[in-house]
Amino acid sequence: MKNNNTKVISGISAVLMCAALFAGCSNKTENKPFTVQAETLASADVTAAAETEKAASEGYKVIVNDQNGAPVKGVTIQFCSDDQCVLGNTNEKGETVFDFPKGKYIVHILAVPEGFEDDENEYTAAGSVTEITLKSSSTAKSDEDDYTWDLPAYGFKVFMCPEYRPDNLKGILTFDGRKLKDDPYICYFSMGYYAVADEDIELFDEYSDKWMDAMMNDEPAPKAPRKGWEDWTHNITSDIFYIYNIDSSRTEDELISIINESLSSSAVASCEKICTKGHTDFYLVQTDDVEKNAENHKENMGDFYDEFVRISTDKDTFLSCFTFSEPRPDELKTVKAGDVISFETTDLDGNTVSSKELFGENKVTMINVWGTYCDPCKKELPELGEMAEEFKAKDCAIIGLVCDGNKEEKVDKAIEILSENGCGYKNILPSDDMTFLKNVTSVPCTIFVNSDGVVLTDPILGAKVDQYPVTIDECLAAME
Image (cartoon, rainbow, N blue to C red; front, side, top):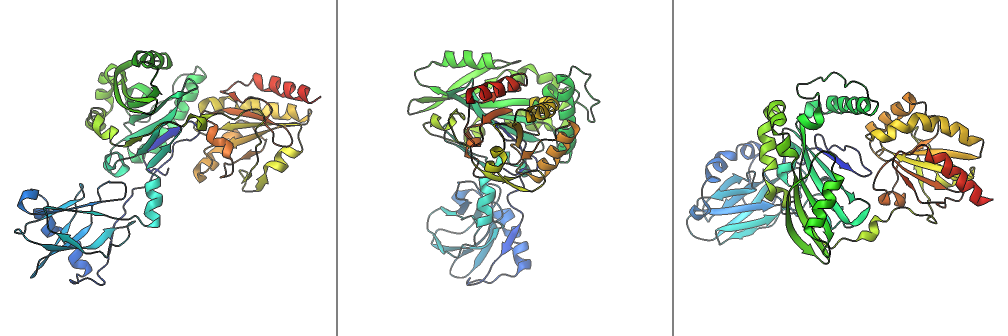
């Protein structure tokens, strides 16, 4: 996902940035019965401003949605009777209204926003409402994909509604989807809020990284560059909604108990069953985080506070983003002993490398999957740098895999982080044929393979730097 000010956090993905979906309107008047110059199209809202406010009962409403059912703003509609054609532009709801007496009319689309295909069709307005679906162009389809999470293993398909998109927000929404307690039938998808403006994203990321490093090293927090950021985890951020799923044979009370055990500083405040798909129940959950930190939020969020309150009390909009299905938990199985890892990719310097050449010269290769956003990952890097030198004497090696390295800025950040921590071993980037990565649901994740890429033991999840040399020795011993 590409976001300019929407953070998306998953088990193996860092903060990703997304651009606004619509950049403007294109004009197209060919093959239309009523030719309109660009200047006329630009001022079409003269009619629309008055007409769109009229009730549907007073005229004819035209509604334009995209293929996902989301309203499309800025579509120029031509509404024609026998003796005149009137222009209107769709509003935020994808609607425009034409005040005509009862009758039969012809509707054309003159201009669509960038990213949609021109519609040459002729529509008949015989009833009070005419609905039109615009097709996305190839570029727009890619953009729509950036607003969609398809998680069949969890039973979720999430399409970010327009209200949650960057152009309609002052702050940042955060999303997180993963399984809970290593149980494939208890998964969640959550949404949180950061009271941070678009222009402050880089500054906030830099500060939050320093803050987390200080906390993990038991050092004083760095000076906050903005009011309220001193304790950003409570002052200007908050989890808002969760969707959990659990096998139908298990009770709501059991789910609440399990969730509470997983939460460090909050507890379930409400739990509402949404639906059942197959043998799985889905629940909307809110914790007491919002209420517990209400005073901090009100004091420190400033101009963001009203937006935060609006979003945190609007569960219907949140739920409208979801399509539920029976989960396919087999897709959540982690990498296991006996699997074979094979791929071609590039390293951080842009050189093409293959698993065959990376693994072929070593008895055992330790693949450390890490992310530039992951503080536990970064904390163990200095020791990994020292360990890599020690492993050489055993004909073993460490390979780093930067899981969020599919973005150029993350590559630059990874190079900087590795240099600062004295890590001279090779680091590589994700590639499409790294199918094993889809099963890595948390980082750091460390996998051990032989010279043929065969996984030798179950992965080590979490930063357990003391265990790595032990596992290397166990793998070597098993080869004798």
